Image 1 (cartoon, helix red, strand yellow):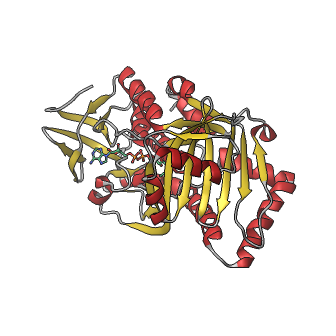
Image 2 (cartoon, rainbow, N blue to C red; image 1 turned 180 degrees about the vertical axis):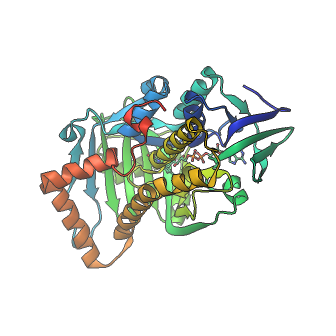
Amino acid sequence: MSSIGENLTAEVAVIGGGPAGLFSAIALKAAGVDAVLVAPPADNDHRTTALLASSVTALTTLGCWEACRPHAAALVTLRIVDDTRRLLRAPEVAFTAAEIGLDAFGFNIENRHLIAALSARAAEIKLSRIEQTALTITSDPLGVTAVCNGGTARARLVIGADGQRSLCRTAAGISTNRHAYPQTALTLNLAHIRPHHDTATEFHTEIGPFTLVPLPGQRSSLVCVLDPAHATTLASTPAAELSAEIERRAHSLLGKMSVEPGYGVFPLAVETAQSFARSRIALVGEAAHVVPPIGAQGLNLGLRDAATLAELVADARRQNVDIGSPTVLARYDAERRADVTSHRIAIDLLNRSLLTDFLPVHGMRGLSLYLVDHVGPLRRALMREGVNPTASQPRLMRGEML
Ligand SMILES: Cc1cc2nc3c(=O)[nH]c(=O)nc-3n(C[C@H](O)[C@H](O)[C@H](O)COP(=O)(O)OP(=O)(O)OC[C@H]3O[C@@H](n4cnc5c(N)ncnc54)[C@H](O)[C@@H]3O)c2cc1C
């Protein structure tokens, strides 16, 4: 690994060392592309990510999953419970992975373990890294220069994996469409005395979902969507009191609960970049799109961005095409748009259907869940689409190297 004081030239510079950036850089390096990662060490992230089966396949293909597996819990059953007190309530629905021939829909892992596993793999394959924040990004007709404190990286293509407030996105002159919801997610991990039986449970409440997702052993992660003031109050409640409150909201499903230190508070918004690539800069992960944590789609979309882009870069390179050319960037934008848009619309609709007081909408939500519960082919199609979306199956997600 390289560090401060170096001027590196590479084919691709990846900016940002969150999961999307690390995954991008590893995928490129594994495809024989000369890549440099510009990223300070990642912050301690106590959130967890439910990785769908196709993401796990891609991580396995890149040699990253073995180190994740001991820290990951299988998601075998997904249950949705209408916990609203409304007149028209939806039936309880449970999906099992075996119905679509899988052992698990995916795995839930703490982000700190995922990032540690990806960082270890990056070191193992000797990925060049400048462990600094990029201060400026400037593109010109021949390439892009990222300047850090005491070092620069010059590349023909920059991958902006630098999160929601992306410097790369600004440097490319790309604006976003953003809508903020009147909701905040409180996240924490907790221990409980009853086993979760590899089942994730999403309670739908009037203000948003309250979702418990298994972690290894008798532990789970919680994403509790609340109104912002309530989230702030709960986040400063003493641990014993908070544990009792969470247990009450979970209807004692997993027995007595004990919250662990390290809560997170995330205001919910949906934000999409108007273009995913321009001026030799391509965006992946939350630099490109942010969705509320409903249905565990955010990073799964981000990994599909990274896998698609790495595939296009590897193919362009084999054909001696400029990897930062407008043709390659336009193709990337086109290939990702449908997948991102369809998930954003589905998540937004579900979230709005919980927030509205309009009775017919509750009826529609209840009817949809009823149909999903009772109509076998629809149910299985929905499950398959959730785990392996047909619109986007980059090669890494199918277990093929680039
Ligand atoms: C409560 C919650 C629960 C979630 N649960 C799930 C889930 O179950 N499943 C799922 O798929 N998704 C989930 N998500 C979404 C998921 O967490 C995000 O999609 C994911 O973390 C985004 O990863 P990223 O690498 O794009 O961005 P980030 O994790 O934000 O990483 C960006 C990185 O870039 C670095 N950086 C920023 N600026 C610069 C710069 N100038 N130079 C160098 N580096 C820079 C930052 O330090 C950071 O390390 C959840 C989100 C929330 C809020």
